[in-house]
Image (tube, rainbow, N blue to C red; front, side):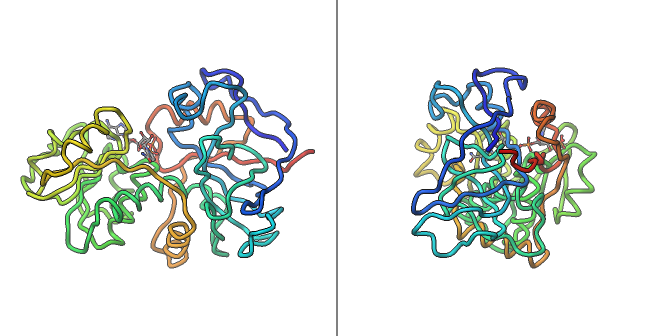
Length: 317
Ligand SMILES: NC(=O)c1ccc[n+]([C@@H]2O[C@H](COP(=O)([O-])OP(=O)(O)OC[C@H]3O[C@@H](n4cnc5c(N)ncnc54)[C@H](OP(=O)(O)O)[C@@H]3O)[C@@H](O)[C@H]2O)c1
């Protein structure tokens, strides 16, 4: 098999496409021949060595959590997936490894793709859409008629957050640069604001949930536009956010932190919404694996419209 590895932390040039021995699945795992992988901001942070608490400092390390492909081997205890099944998913382990032509992954972290789902859609959906789902449905407990504010709505997580908030019946106010307002309206946003030029804090006491996807707001700043009992949900696992999760635990306005986890049930739910035509990934660019460094540079502009993907070539060994 072949995979992107890093042998030191650093700029996108540290990403290398190396040949490796095939791993075999353990009893509850499957091996997947990957066709398409997706990038997430976390991948660039791992590459730079910002998550060594979780990844450790030993090399080589592998990157990437999102993938879509075909099952090529199953562990002895996997009864619900078979060789040849088209699957999509997100690997939970910090060992990662989706920038590769093969991955071994717990069967419960992946799901079957509907027949109408392309490998592009399959790779683009998992991490970003699971984050939006777990933030808005599980933490936010959004219910029909409630108002939600989605800040940073035109990127990977945000484009799913707008669609999922609508699926949950909420009224959506979403921010992006003006160039992406038409996209947000197309995805279902009821109101769109330009984060650089509009007053984001004009509607006092309106929102049940403020989902800070981009991560540069705070409970303090957003409190005036929140209802009396409301949530500020962050995607950023900083020490300050973790502290606020605890200090606001008994307050009427609470801070929550979403920490995405892949599971079959949620992936199946996303697949059903996709099949019903109610959810789709916005694809910004697809890069061939040889251009993985360019793909990372594009990601790091923080101006991605939806998702950036990596096309994986067929295995050569
Ligand atoms: N905790 C978790 O489990 C978890 C899971 C997933 C992601 N995350 C984190 O969530 C964050 C967002 O992830 P993502 O995949 O959505 O990132 P992304 O796709 O890279 O986000 C790009 C978007 O950010 C918007 N943006 C740029 N500057 C902005 C600003 N000043 N204010 C508001 N929006 C701005 C851009 O909008 P315009 O182009 O329209 O300007 C662009 O559409 C990242 O920090 C990521 O690490 C955390």
